[in-house]
Length: 335
Image (spheres, rainbow, N blue to C red):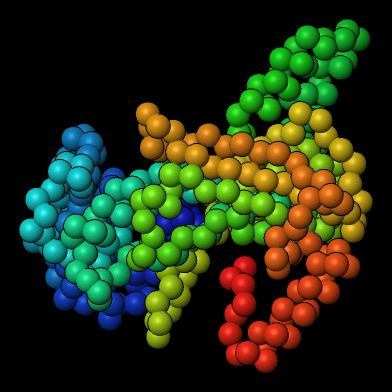
C-alpha cells in the first residue's frame, strides 16, 4: 500500500498542504495500518492522534514506527475495532483510507460512518476524505481477450474450446480487477453513485441502482463495463485534493473493476448504449456486494431526465432544462 504513490501522495498533499486544519486538533485515524496517515497528521501539527487498528500484529508494528519517528507523545495506538471504543472520546478530524475495489468491496466505510456518528464533534468536525464518486464507462478488453480467451482458439495447432468456454465463464461470473488502458474507454464516463461522507447514512450503502444511457465516442469492440472511483478532500477556503483511480490517471493498487459481458459487440462513434445496474450489500458480509447488470434498449426504454446521452431528443430536453434553470436561478434536477 505504501508503494502506491498516487494513493499515499494524495493523503500527504491533503494533510500537509492544509496544516491550519490540523494545528492543535484531535484526530482519529480509522484503520491506521502502519500509521502513515497518523504520522502525516502529527507532522501537520495535530495535538493528539488516535491510531485505531484492529490487527494486533499491525497495531504493534504501528506503535514501533510511531516511537521510531519520535511521535509517541502525540500518537496513541489503540488496538481494537473502532466499534468497540468507548463513546466518550471526541475528535475534531477523522482520517481513513477505507476504500476498496470499485470503492465499496472490502471497504471500511461502515466503520468510518460509525466513527463519525460516535466520535466526531458536530457540526464542525471534518472527514478526510470528504466525498466519493463511482464512475462507469463501456470499454474494450483487447489484451484480456488476446491473452486469456482467444489464445485457446489455436494452441500449437489445436483447438481448445472447452478451456476457452471455461475461461470465459470465469471472467463473466465475477468482476475482474484490471488495469484498463485509457485508449480502451469507449465513452465519456458517467457518475453512477455519489457520497457526501458528512451526511450519508449507512442505509445508503445497503442497495443503490444506476440507470444510464451514454453515447459511444470511439469505434471499437464493446467487451464490458469499466468501473472506478474518485475521492475528494474538499473543504471551503482550503487546498482541495482528488485521488482518482480512473484509467486516465496514474495506476493505483485498486486498478479498475470490469464487468465482462458474455458476448462482445461492435460499436461505432455516436451509438447509444444503456444499462441498469444495482449494487446490493451481502446480508452475511456487509463488505461484499452483489452487482447485477443488464443492458437497456435506448430506442424503447425511458431515459432518465436529464440524460447524458447525445441523442437528439435528450439533447433538446437537456437544453430546455438548462434554459429553465437559468431563468429560475436554481437546479431543476440534480444530475
